Image 1 (cartoon, helix red, strand yellow):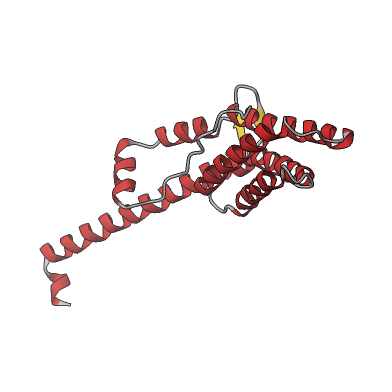
Image 2 (cartoon, rainbow, N blue to C red):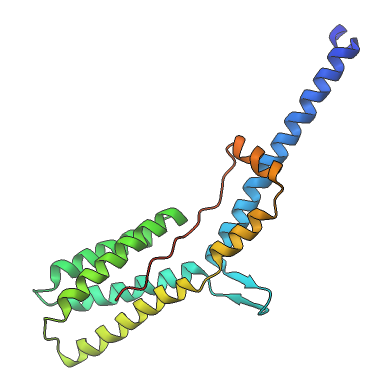
Length: 191
């Protein structure tokens, strides 16, 4: 207790406590901002200039995933397409099980590539009338989902939200290894 009666030691302890509390507050705030930004990936981005909620990027991924499931299921029934259809279904399963935005981005790329490869061989196969119609529907849905991803404002909104933070806040939160939001780099629309 004699240490606390020493004015210099008491001031030093106070300064250390204030700095530690400030750093802890910045760390928690940075993590909260990250959670709020990433929530818009799943919930949608509110577009103030249009006064509406834009559909979530994740909902477009779900649409692409469902279309891939339909395509893989239908086209897997054709022996000459079954290998490529199974690869598409594996990629679709990986997208469904992806738990983070960065993992969803990676698996969406794999799904897109699997789709492109399957579409390359579909043209050389004669499908029955019902399967042709279903394939056209699922293909259109898949491409539409990727096209819609290009129009989402998730990355823009994330950048804007991060830029609202002061430079010192950003530097300190980086120094403290606070979480940063995952961005989603949208792939081109598959042909």
